View 1 (tube, helix red, strand yellow):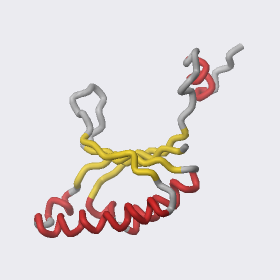
View 2 (cartoon, helix red, strand yellow; view 1 turned 135 degrees about the horizontal axis):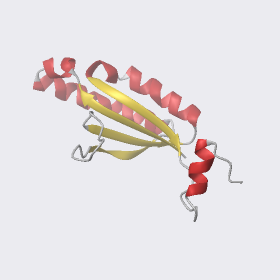
View 3 (cartoon, rainbow, N blue to C red; view 1 turned 60 degrees about the vertical axis):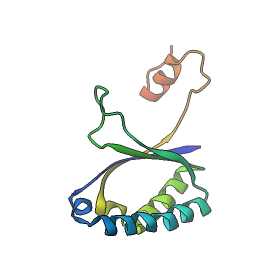
View 4 (cartoon, rainbow, N blue to C red; view 1 turned 120 degrees about the vertical axis):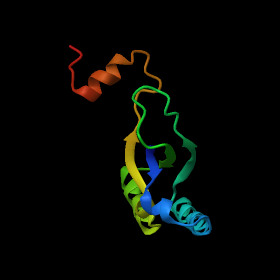
Length: 119
């Protein structure tokens, strides 16, 4: 499974909208999320980020999605663009294929990722 995490925060254009316009836009996102689901995306959830941690990102929110492949992440990104997400939110998108969940010696995963020979 490929994971897509969209770390985001409202920008000035969002702040300039009235509450009524914000709600209209947010309701419109339902159609885009459902379009992504129809394409195979699994919504894992949304959250406020705990910014009290050292090295926390400047953005305050995250959406996390599961997709079958890196290609599907790119297809989902097209839906995000179509939804005009980037007009209202500054985002950092992270696409990852996780490794090592059951590795008894996690240093082997780090070594592989960093290109360090295990000897």
